[in-house]
Every structure is written in C-alpha cells, then in structure tokens.
Length: 181
Image: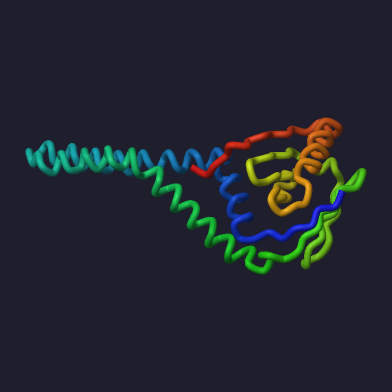
C-alpha cells in the first residue's frame, strides 16, 4: 500500500497537541500551574482578611474563583501558541513537501525531500486513530503522521492498519472524539 500526501503546519500542530494531551508530565504541569495561581490569590485574600480590608479580600477570592473557571482556557491557548511557535521553528522546511509512505510486508518506507527511512514493522509500538489523523507511534519515540483527509482511500488504510495491529499484536487505539482541551 502506498500513501502520498503533504503535511502542513496544522498537521504537525495537531500531532504535538495530541502528544501533550496524553503526556502525564504536561497534565500534572497544567494542574500545578492552576493550583499555584489559585493559591496565590487565596493567600492574598487571607492577608487582606487579617488586615480587615474586606473589599480587597473579596476581590482576591473572586479572582481565585475566576481563575478556576478561566485559567484552563488560558493554558489551552498558551500551549497551542507555544507548540505552534516550536513547530514553525523546527519543521518549517517540511511544510507542504510531498511525502510517500509505502507499507511492504515486513517494513515501512517513508520517503520525503530529506531522504528515505526504512523501518521494520516490529518498530511500531501503537497505532492511534483520531477523528482526522492516524498516528503510527514508533518504539524509538517518533511518529508517522497520516492525515485522513489527504489520502485517497482512508477506509482501506484503516482496515489495513487494524489487520496489521492484530498480526503484530500491537495496540490499536481509537480516539475519534479527541479534541485539544
């Protein structure tokens, strides 16, 4: 099976956001950040409570409540901006360049303008299907990004990958409703 497509900045961004959403380190970092902001406002509220400046105390209590509600949205935008900047710096020479992935019986070939990569099928650690993408996660830490909308027959590919996961006894995950949050 041969796939031909070109990845753009959004394809790389969605991949990075997906990886961030499943990373335990990023999840705990986001929680710690939220807790730090809320605690800082509550400490200030407590200090003003002790000095009997009730208006400032209410102000910082209100800010802590607003932080619990709105800070996750800020973090979502912050990480998206961060990854977009990282991708535009790191992958700028790969945008919209033709890429070919060839699935052979025992190997996968990835051909792009930087060269050819050939890896054994046993190098695949997991296959992840989201609503718009298929990620072939490699044991060495990388991934092959396959956008469903940019290939000719995505149903044929998905059938092939499900069969491949059964043959190789690797995990096939479906996260069709995945969204960055």
